[in-house]
Image 1 (tube, one colour):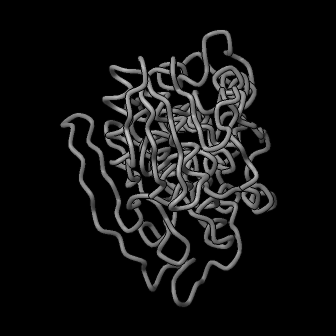
Image 2: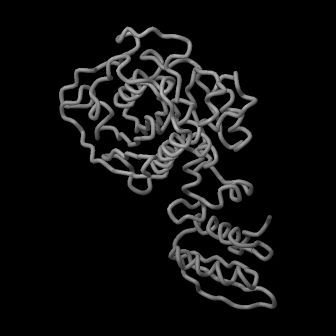
Length: 77
Length: 276
């Protein structure tokens, strides 16, 4: 899957908790302060993943709805 | 770090990766770790199954015994068709089917003062699941000499014990300086054992081994955990390094490995010293 290009992780169609697992794997390899954009489905994903992001000390910079999904910008904490 | 998790590994270990204390980095540590299990019996079975499931990269298994039908009541590493096979072969087959990420290194030779240092040298953590005093003392002394962390476990009737011996912070001989005389303590072959008991104790050992590999939490080091299955009670008893310990004390008297069978003059038979 070619989803990690240019700090972008397209997790549309990936259900919980694998969407957060994949986000976490990418965040772990980033430097503090670096940014990552993830695309999450509406429903469970957008309810759960941002909470997990904050729980592990990362910053949610932006959550914007786009059609039927959300673009979430994270700053590695 | 050299290891990169594959897509299937990310999925297989996702419940580890989700944990804040583990994560992808911790899972890589587990995959790069090596654990030696002394005994593929009652304690070794659950330990082997769960350490393999966790993805321990190299799992050494020492056992010279063959699977007996009477083992299956408490040794779920071995299944009915395995009766008669060497335990390490049966263990390797079960583990290969459970998790192909794990390399099993089988040792069928009996551990002795001659070979033990070479066997333990290649491992980060040693888990003792043996059921006899000569092996327990040999493994303890070898871990003291090699500076290896040792996860101890033992069972008797309805009671189990577990602890961790960290190099320089006490050992099994601090607790019990010398083995009991031969015949003073009945072996598992003579007394019964409730099958679930080694399951609990072996998994406590596996838990401690995983924590040591990950470097998380507080280990049992410095405490003896005593588990009473009949009353379902756990007690932690404080342990201290004994300055007069014959092997790790200030003036050690045991300065080389001892093969207690010969020392005690116990006849070594085909099934003597098998593992719980």
